[in-house]
Image 1 (cartoon, one colour):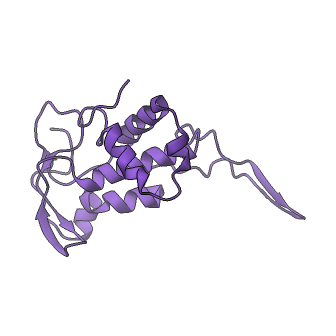
Image 2 (cartoon, helix red, strand yellow):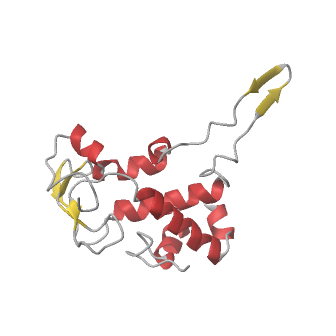
Length: 170
């Protein structure tokens, strides 16, 4: 399936290519096929959609968590601002970073790509097969991007949100 911004991804493939063109350490992205890039972006977006965000969805028929109506505390500005009327840059960046994480860590969603054992000289570490991240909050590079938009980020910044923390209508 092809990437469609706002339908199955927070960012288009063309915009993701632009994002990675100026990002260091993105070899797995640049070497991936277009089909794998599409799959990574779509899968990343579906994982990001599982989080609880501030505000309420803008339209009852939308399939993605953004766009949303409401406000959030933007640490860059140091103040509360309105959510943009489209998909926030933070979500687009997080979609890219999560897609790269998926390409870099084959099997991470199934937690089948982990290590079982590491041995260095006489030191052996065993039982490492369950160390894969279990949620987005375990992937620091992604979660730090979306944190201000999450319900948890809002609670920690004492921001009032429009409506509830659910992204779908209840």
